[in-house]
Image (tube, rainbow, N blue to C red):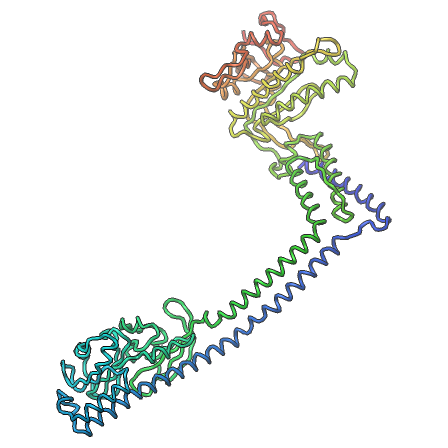
Length: 638
């Protein structure tokens, strides 16, 4: 891009100047008192020391492997202990019941009789009372089938304490199927409403409370529970599962127990909800039951997570203190860098003149000074090119080569400027033009236009090529608004001027045309500029020249008029046959903008006659106008 090439040349020259300055100052002692390198090394070293310390502390996470082994061993130990406790309790109940029944037989009570107490001696009743006194958790011993009233020895005290009807025994027996053979365990809690088991062997059913086992199983982090081969929960710390008659078939650990031939097993598994557990089971030596023990994986490592979190908090606190230290230490770096960043953003936006305070005597201070000088150089450079084009080029919005655009082209020219300039000194001419151009360029910029070039006292600008308001109609209206603003600006410019040689009043002619143009970078490798070319540009230039014979100040072609006619007050001029055009081109003199809102007051002027009176022009007699030139560019149609 030509602008980038010119800027690069300027920047290279500026860099060369900076290098020379540095070489001249290199011999001066203590020029860089606090180099950035030393500052950065100090900061990085400090942070590394903190980071290494934090990493050293966090290495403790590595003990998680050992903790897992310990957790598995502990879970297995708890399972073995719980199973031993359960087996001891169950065997005790079984043994005591056998001794009790044998004692009854000894005194002559038939334990298969329908009414043990009626046939027993008084001594038998004493044995029964003694048994229930020593085994308060036993609810009843049922001998025989499951018919109501069949050989039941009831612990009345048990039912009173637990507020249970003794009829629950018959109800339970009616729901079960009697089995003969090995000892088996059944869950009696759903019927009795309290944690209770039924131990059955031969024709004997022993019903007892499991509160003691429940307390034993729920005494640690590890959860232990007792189940039978069918998966029924017999004893569990969560009593609701027992009283609800829960069955855990389908649970991975339960299925391992039911399918495994091993007497005991320790494993790490994931349940149906995706939760990981350390699990273990141990089969009892009788009753075809087992104790399962489990502990949640996350619970085992909770201590490590807590320790890790504390370490993170400690690290955060240390880092916070470090940040405070670095903040106070690096103010001499961060503040100048912040100002440099803001200045770079302003330059990227096209605001090349920046102010930076380079007080620090380090590399950033030197960079700030050089940045200010570069900005001043860019300010000078921007005056030799179009600022909007420069900004678009810097943002990478301009493509290489040309691109077709629908644009509105504007040309203006000062009337009789040659005669005016002959009465002034060259310096006065330059001053006069600078004042005039400043006012005109402001009108172009305020309406979103782009000044293409200055040709003597002429101004060429365009809307819709470099930038656009969104549509050709909006660009055309902005262009006409700029021309009307120039009319007003010239009125202000002419205030106080007396048409003397030194203070001449001036008026301009403006030509506007809308059409397809090629916008791009034109020139050579040595000199290039962004401009627009095409027939629409030529027609705009020739339209401008028609203002003089037609005694108008703003002329637009039919191309532009069609786009914005509903917004304008215009008067049609005679059509013109322009060189290179077959058909005559319709021309319109712009009077003013129409009032855009209902009830809005229409601003003056409203007729071309009023415009001419304001400009001091008389209505021309087109019949006597001689338009012959060295090269005839137009013919006014009769």
